[in-house]
Image 1 (spheres, protein in one colour):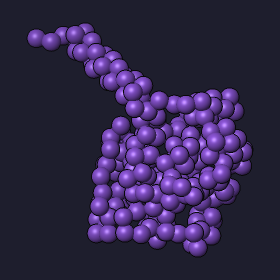
Image 2 (cartoon, rainbow, N blue to C red):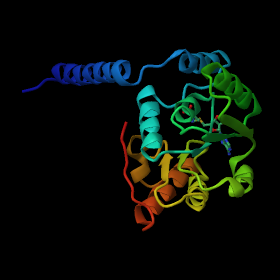
Image 3 (cartoon, protein in one colour):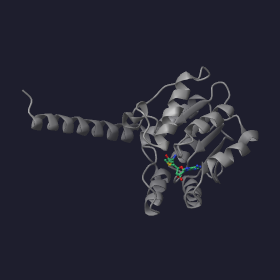
Image 4 (cartoon, protein in one colour):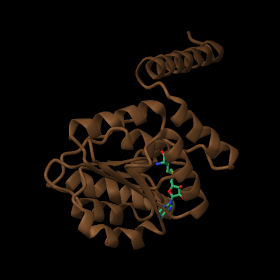
Length: 215
Ligand SMILES: C[S@@+](CC[C@H](N)C(=O)[O-])C[C@H]1O[C@@H](n2cnc3c(N)ncnc32)[C@H](O)[C@@H]1O
């Protein structure tokens, strides 16, 4: 018979093993250089929440961008520019990266982070509510990769814009679509309602080939 203590230590062991695997993969395949480290440090010092993607996710986004030969990438939700640096570095020569950010002080940090990381020549942040800025991007579409990582209620609208700005073969990535399984239950707030509606839409839209990654 398994008692509570041994079960707990089994779970702790699993968590420790998982942590070790994440650290090793990060060290071997997704190590941060000074530019990325600076972006994280500057955002933390400015009091921003630590909600940027992980290094492994950054590397995965880069891989997707390189796989589709991305020349134009759009991001919705910049925070301190961390994911932006990963993405901007994956562009083809003369490529362009645009990130949309509602908070002007975040945007200022993003500009500095891009300069420190050496990507200012190809990466820019535009300040405002994404839903106001997106209609202004029409003439810059199509984008090869679109990364949605901002406020959750308008995720279905962000998807509409992402589809409008896509070409056959474009990749659309959205963060926070699982939420520890809450995304598969009845939504309890506006944010989750946005995520649930987004998931339903992508699951049923015949134009999309879809996959989920649980992290
Ligand atoms: C999760 S963070 C983005 C993290 C970033 N992609 C990274 O991984 O480094 C979400 C960001 O979206 C911004 N945001 C929230 N609502 C927005 C809106 N309606 N339009 C544009 N940006 C928004 C927030 O200010 C915040 O900086």
